[in-house]
Length: 391
Ligand code: ADP
Ligand code: MG
Image 1 (cartoon, rainbow, N blue to C red):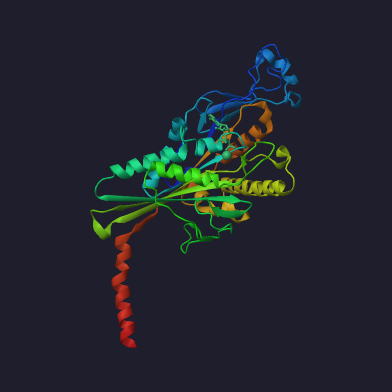
Image 2 (image 1 turned 30 degrees about the vertical axis):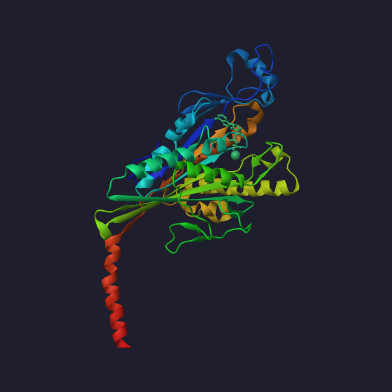
């Protein structure tokens, strides 16, 4: 689980959410259970699930299941949190993003990302619908409540940006006047990656955020594939910048700044599954390139002595440089299907998530000590004066 906000290192928190099972109701008379579709996930408790559970009463029938001929062994996985099919948006929010909010208000960066194959519930979890909103809405609602109830001697400001990475190009989802890819650069002190020309917005209230999200999601790049009629081919990144300042102590107060990134990744399925060709295949290759790069960065960060982290291998990982290994707390929400139709994708996704559990990130508070900052000025002014006198 999340560590003490003051600690220097924190492991990535990995949660798994199982989407509701879709398929014919299992029939006890059918050898395959239900015409070939079988439930391949059994949630044991809030932290453990079993992949491809063997049913002792039907053990010899397993060979007739869709994937039965491959002789799978059931595998037990443990994660920080496992949410079953019945979990509500609120429960998922409380177990993933909510514990990050105190840290964000205290100057610690944080990232939440949803990973998984198309159709497994990433967008449902991150955005949801107006009737059943997801993590972004619930997080922003809490942030606005905190702003309203902040003590009179504090000011908290937030602004947001929303972009997509599609085919290794970055587009502003809230300002699509141009189709040109936006450039990434690091700021002067190497503490954050800046997207040049990205629009930033100051939402009035949480409903305003939801309208912006809907507009932004309509601008997301979609295309028909065999895996899903309207699958998202892009990675969507919402960034919420929070800046907090103590008013009472005037100019000598510290300013705390942090960015919370909430990311809905493109589907992780392989190109072969979607039988993509031509343009779609190129998209698939680029999506996989970003996700492969993300996996490679995760692997490198997991090693005992991470000396080279290949952030530069994709736009997504360049963008997320300080959101993975830098000053950041990370929560990965892994969306999986419990249907045997998605056996390979679910297996691959679980393996990816299991590997991610070992990342340790170094977290530091982003504060500007205004007093120390101001202390430079008298000396600077004196130096300038003496330079002028010398002229
Ligand atoms: P992804 O973004 O991973 O491709 P979606 O979030 O779009 O998948 O989910 C596909 C469909 O399944 C959507 O219609 C969504 O509303 C529904 N869905 C996914 N997860 C859930 C859930 N936990 N509860 C109810 N409906 C869900
Ligand atoms: Mg989606």
